[in-house]
Length: 283
Image (cartoon, rainbow, N blue to C red; front, side, top):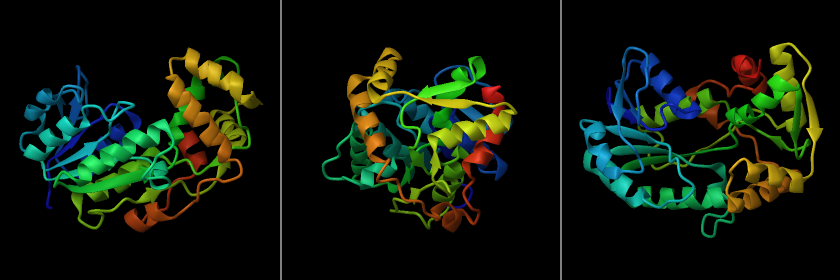
């Protein structure tokens, strides 16, 4: 595939935005799917459309060769129609899935894994060329601590010792661009990780180092954390799945691999680098 035209969904999010940036830097024609007015740099064509309304996607997909698909919902409802529309125009889809899918693929045990598993199955059955990226936890999820860091310098959260190989969104994007523009990852489900396990307590300390002031982790219990998540609007079934799964990782952490380097030729960025890149969000 030479100089494909690519549509990026989730283009205003961390990962989708990084994919747009990477494609633009490599000179690949890129469209960014948006629901409203968004200003992108020169070379990025913003197009209107909504994954919740498959009929709105036809114009955005006209002439597109490949799609980077970020599914923004907590169930697979409506996904089959979206994939059908993509298949009428494009020949390739790269789906942002989850490392958890491969653990219990036949009978997924938690809410996020369930819809990712179904999306992967629908895409594989569609006749499209496909790649399913399975990253571990996103480093950008720690932006949920930003308000606390700015206001108090204290992060109150459960599981101080929880260590994960969080991955920088720029590394996910680099792998995605390889999958979108070359053929080596066709039919692959690469699990991609950060380069090291870093505890949540250490993540907070590294954020403090990046912004030049001490930030402290204050551990709370799982019950209090669950109530906070529900009060913030997270669905109860999601909360009841995520927290126990994270607690299990205390004794059974996610494996670390070098797939980012193998695929892109560049080692995955450590969490420290992510914290420096996003210091302004925490100041």
